[in-house]
Length: 143
Image (tube, rainbow, N blue to C red):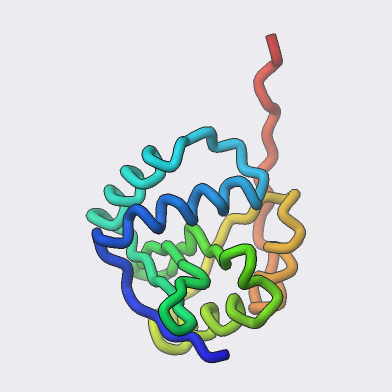
């Protein structure tokens, strides 16, 4: 099943906030923001330095990517495939469209992935990413 892409606009903010909420839950991120807060954050990002692409199969959005283009690199902040659309090739197709039709080929691509998100790590490695650094932390003491 072939997909197509389109740039997200202000009218897509509600959907992007919902999808971002699913992404946060699926990856095990500790971000506590509600959907309404994520929508407002997304609105600000799209009005600022970020762009988002939606990937559709027929009329259904199957995935999205949120990224920032800098002079020497593309920073992929979020990439999400809807739960019921996974393991069907949509993520690979979407990423291929990003690499071949949307992003300049001469720029370095970067993405941050939670170390506990093994599925995402496998996906990005299969897409050609390699490990570069590892951020470590000491969480605050529980009171």
